[in-house]
Image (cartoon, rainbow, N blue to C red; front, side):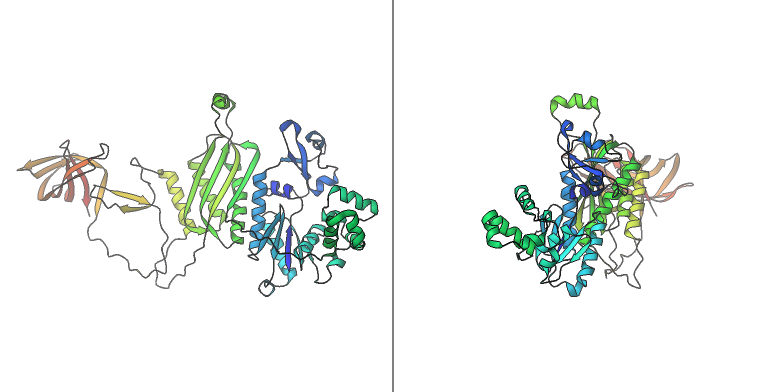
Length: 513
């Protein structure tokens, strides 16, 4: 058995699936062509009832009250077809992308796993609805019969095996989509349904219409058996929306991102996948002055890119939306947004089981939101270009204060590794180092003054001399380091001092706990 997923008025649904609100009952027309010669290329049922026809000009279509006009977008249609393929791949690995808005699915061997064909049809409809598409389902023993049942009937149609001709008999002949010349000829003969075409004598039909007429009759009788042209659907998850009016505020942009992320996560769920990386590309509307200045240079449209990385794959679009809102609030685009494209990199979901005696770890999504809020408060990078929020890691270098900050990694609850023993001595580093004045005797510190306080050196250990990065004038360093035990009225304890070799200036690097 084969199932056909058919999207009526595909171009209209592809253009409107990412727009918020219910536009099913409103007349919608899709326009294509140059600005001055745009014509209607697709309409929905509500527009047909109001007299809108394909081929009308934009001015003629605008006469209809309440009409919604949209420019045709090929990327949106490709994305909608990819979403339809994802719905088919959820039920079977053998799918065919027959044409825009039509996907055929091989259901062989799935009845025990997925239930009856009526239940499969309901699940296919629900899966497509989650992706923003309203479909018709046809299920039959051969692909073409399933296609015509879905195209000619509404809802879910299951054609009993061996009764294909009787089921297809009342369908209008236009469902076969013959050439206009053949359709006019059949209409002049009074052939207006599948049944009347199937009843014609085969030899006489071939004499008048040739092999094309024979093919149409076999399709009307539901007799053609063929193999599916399998589609290796690429794991590409991208949603795009071109706005009619540019947006210059982040709040309405969040509604657009919410819809796009909801569509992407629905497609990821259909493939049992998640995502750990989201890319957002915003096409900005350049001001007329900028366009005049750059007109002679042939520059492309201005794009604004942001990328979001997560430690664990997720299917939660609300989490992704919140992280994108915080990121865009910290790095807003500098011009109104004309087009939004969201791309997700697929990744396999990870499942962990917590042990009874394992340390509790924060929920990854809540942790990412907390880190994003911290970055918004303290900033992303310091003066040295290191991230301010993350986990510090010591570099494999003798350079003083050599470390980097990496993103937090999730704790593996199933890991059997033991916790590291506590560090007995810790150094509290002063950033920046505190200037100091040091009195030495025989090149050994005996007295120090810093922060307006004076102390005697009880014990001195050192010096430890080192230098590095001599090949780079900006990062070259050289110092003489001492560990000093201070004994004073106000300050006392173990401190780390160092002297810059070039300038001979003393600094306090930190204090030991």
